[in-house]
Length: 293
Image (cartoon, rainbow, N blue to C red; front, side):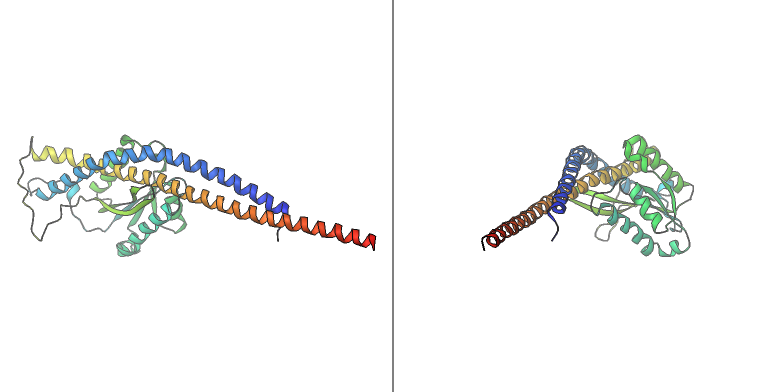
């Protein structure tokens, strides 16, 4: 059995750890509220805009074509992995990183073997994961989470669109955690470029008979880039809110585990102290009896 001093030292150490995890939990809870409000406000707008974009791309004819809707064979693929800059958030980073690498080794196995699958990391944890496993990382944009704004996200989204237009890549996929609630996130693999057309319903093509004002060319040139930037910004907001939710949940569990451990250590300490007191009493009693005998 450990000595009383060792148990007392361990109790003090666990209490210090519990203070840290409790503070991190409260900080994450405060940041989660702001991040959750942001994603919940933009999600209906982004989803509706993306639906309009899919419908519009499906209705385009040969006379009006956008470079962002060109369907090419995915010979060169870019996977954008969105993680966090810090750890201590449970399986948030590891699960999404594994999803991204599994995407490369399964769906794009042929391109990966040919060296045509590249990664762009948004978040230091994803960058570490990719480098440790030898995947080709063309760049990182970890600083975007220091000040997450639409303008900064638009710059990165614009660079991705230029890479597609110049045929540097034929397919660009986003891999991120979609925010569900504070305790749940879902790993999402989303095709960013080319723009996917609206899926057919019940095996029949939908009838897209719309009137466009001022004209379909103006709408295509304006709407598609705006929608892609909004889609990318929403993915970043989803990941940001999911990170704070995962960290708050992880720190809450860590705080509860520390509390339970302190109770167990306190019980062990009391038992050891009682045993030590009992031994001292026995020693005094035996010494007194020896003197009297």
